[in-house]
Structure formats: structure tokens, C-alpha cells
Image (cartoon, rainbow, N blue to C red; front, side, top):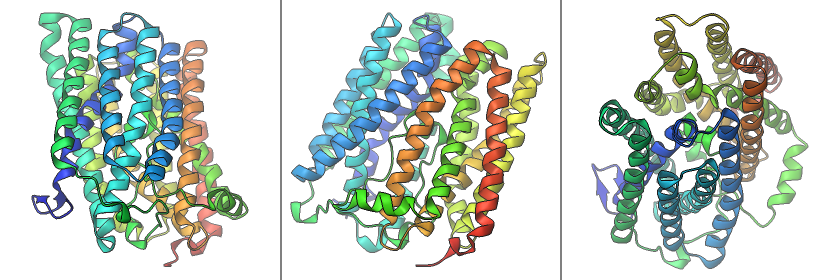
Length: 443
């Protein structure tokens, strides 16, 4: 299977997941708007849905991943995950109430958790070990471009179809089309993916130096914020929990704290962001997708370039600089929310969103690189696993805090709180980078 390539840079089966990832991209970007505009939900309902989907993903990630390792099978769990995700999309598209959409979303979130560890484990199980970094970077890039295709498809559809169908039916039909796309992925996986021999499946996957600068918590930030359970599944080892305790006794624990604060501040600002665009700035649904598209293009373009930069620099300081850039971006959002929006507000938002994409490329790659460099030798995989857990908890809590602030205090306080927390994060990261000069060690 790993010998079959397309365009000479990736196994063919990587592309079997493209329709699924397009469908996933549509779900991630449209679900908040669907909850409010189609089934009459509130900003609080959006936070509830987002938090429960994330929680279902965290639980499902551990369940499906460990079960896959226990029975030493990948393909069946990949298929189960895509099939369940498809049912969830059909349920959302046909849902009439917030409760129905919530249940379907949780089903989709739990099912997505079977796809992620199975697919990433397949990469590790089927590609040559000496080229694992190369193939993971390609795996990320294909996922990033699939997300971009989803935004283009959604933007074009929502630019035209509401005139004919109306907004509710246009949104519903897009979810049904996404479900059909997931079915296509299911068929392609049946054809292109072969189960690797059991002797090639290693449940105790090790971190390799080839992953430094290529491994990211997520190529597209929007995916990470919506679904924080995603991570590279090589972290489970027999002595995993013992290593958790050991890592928490090192400088790494301070970095975990900074990361928790970083993702909390990001989530506070960006969970209500699509609704801020439509409700306050008067943007249409397709404009929301076009703005997200511009940002995603920047994230995808700079991913590999930032990875090369991080390998030769102090990754914590780079992350601090990116966080500092976020302070300015969040301040602009706060000021726009504070004063009466003008006809230039949407253009300003678009420009700042492009800068957000650049800062995410730095934050995403620098984060996993810093964790790997700070962790005890041989325990990098476990350390990155803890890092992903920290992100998951921060984003779940951030979702609830964000919608509470918007519902009770408004967007100004919400964005202002994000700005303050991001400022604290930047100070902490810069200070940590100064006292850990060995962060750039080569192991």
C-alpha cells in the first residue's frame, strides 16, 4: 500500500480521506451558524454543542485508539468512524431542534475520534521509518488543502443557493451533501486501504527526530479549536502514566501551563467569532467562509516554511512572538466590537485574519517542537500526548467561558478578556524561553 503514490509524494490511500475531510471542514465551519440560523439556537447553545462534541472526541479518541491497538486492526475502525460521522451529518441536516442537532453532533464527534488515531497510526505502520517526517508533512498538507476545498465548496454554494432555496434549506442541503461526500470516502477506503500485516503494527510508537519541525497540533487552527482530540497517536506506552508524573516535575510543566493559557485565550475569542461576523458586522454566511478561506490558505502555505525555521531557532521565543502578534489582533477585534461598525470593519477583519493564519503556523509547529525538546530523552511521545490533553481541556473550558461572557457581558468583554489572557501568555512564554536556553537542543 505504501508503494502506490500519486504525484510522487504520498500514498494513494491518503487521498481516500479527502472527501471525508471536505465534509469535516463543512461541519466545523457551518455548525455554529446552523445552530443559530436554522434551528433557532442561541450563542449559549453553540457553546454547549461545541463543548460536548469536543468532550465526545476526547473520550472517543482514547476508546477507539486503544481498542485499535489491542486488536491490532486499523481499517475496520477507520470505516466505523467514517460511517458514524456520515450518520451524524445526516442527523444534523435533518434536525429540527437544537437537541436533535446536539445529539447528531455528539455522534459525529465520537465517530470522528475513530478516524483520527486509525489514520495516523496507518501512516506510522505503513511508511518507511526513515521517511516518517516527510510523509506526515504530506498527510498534514493534504488535510489542509481538503479543508480549503471545503471552504470553496461551501462559499460557492451559499453564494448562490439561498436565493433559490432560502438560508435554512441551503444550509441543510450542504450538510446532506457533506454526508454523501463521507460515503464516497468510505467507498474509496474500501478500495484503496489494505490492512497492514499484524507484525507491522506497533502499539508502542516512539517519537523520532524526523518529526521535529513537521509535527503540529493541527495544520488548520479552526480544526483544533473545534475538535481538540486530534493528535498524533503514538503516545500510548506501558509506562505512560509514570512518564506523565515525571514530566510534570520538570520545566515542561511550566510550558504546559503557558499552553493552557494560550489556548484558553484563543478559544475565548474565536468560538463566537463567526456569529460576531454575521450578527454584529452583518456578514453573510458565504463571506464568513471566504474570510476563513483566506486565513486557511496562509496557514497551509507557511506550515512547512515555519517548520524549517523552528528547527534552527528557539521555538518558545518564536511562539512568544506569534502570541504577541495575537495581542494586536485581539485588540483590533475588541475595538471593532466597542465602537459602531463601519463599512471598513469587515475589510479590517479580513486583513487581521490573514495575520492570524501566519501566527497559527508558528504556534502550531513551535508548540509540539518545544514539548519534544523540553521533555526527558525518550519520552517525547508521552510529553506530546500530555500537551494534547492540556489543549483539549483548555478548549473545552474556553468554549463554555466564551459563550458565557458573550451572553452576559457582550463581545467587548469577551474579546477584551482574550486580549488580557494572551498578553499574560506572551509574557510567560518569553520569560520561559529566556530561562531555558537548551530548548533548542539536538537530541
